[in-house]
Length: 414
Ligand SMILES: *Cc1c(COP(=O)(O)O)cnc(C)c1O
Image (cartoon, rainbow, N blue to C red; front, top):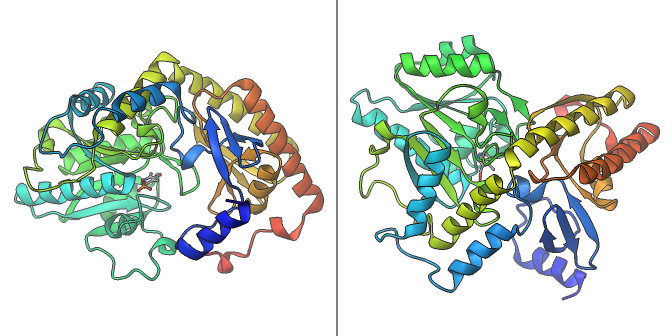
């Protein structure tokens, strides 16, 4: 297949749900991606948050290779050692509870939403409403896109699912406590909003949310789909906050590139979901569970949590230094290796120009560059990426070209 054949096949046969960039990648190893012509790229946004241990990590490869010749799929009515082992590993790193396996982040959140509703029904209070926050992202299924609350993801798909109170301002405790009603059963949040532009929840706020949930017997769900598995320098993002949630949801990086999602619930509420109440045909199949065990092993063996903390501080310091010199950089924020760089110019052209120079990054919310390299990124790789980013941003300042200009607020797609 030539390059053009590939583009043609997509144009003709694949629904155009994604904005695409004209690159074809065929190989990945650690921090590197390789295109059809064998050109190497530094991947500072592996798989939209999937690649915490990098592309094709040896621990994931050997786990998958080991399993694939033995048994690929097993219905969830039977037992498999790997699923039990992975569940125990997840609990060992989080809090005492039980897990439900799915295949994606949206499905993990769906499971959490269903557990909340079942909990509200079972305790006789008939509470069902779930509160979410402005700039949240919880997925694209109807319930999770409702929870997400952002109009740009909902337009055209109405009517939405009932029972959500969305778009509460993050870090505004007063607004939250005012929004709680006798129908509210849960609060669902990310401690660092990923898609929403790397907004970090404040420790004071999260602490007060936990307290409020205790007082009102509401469940606190932390969506760790993007922040989980070491991304912020701790295994899970909530662990920076000195609170224990009632539920967390995981996906993205959990399977090292293979599709797996997971909802974890505190032991006292986990048995709310009884046989027949929820299911997933593929959820937690032997291969993805082995892969996820490989991810946990890689994070521990290579001491990726402390390394991510160090490298997060290193990159952030360098970006803050760049901010001093480069007037288009407005703010640098994040936690660990989940870093946002807010620009006064449009980020799309910056992303494109970085790619031309062999660096893959992301832009979200029009002006926020997102850097989320693998947790084992080296200083040398960080310096190389910063060099490219800096040159592109300097060029943007000099050119002040049209492609970098931010559209006026009224034209912004919401
Ligand atoms: C990506 C993401 C999701 C959705 O995950 P999918 O696997 O794409 O369904 C949910 N929540 C957060 C915080 C995410 O970043």
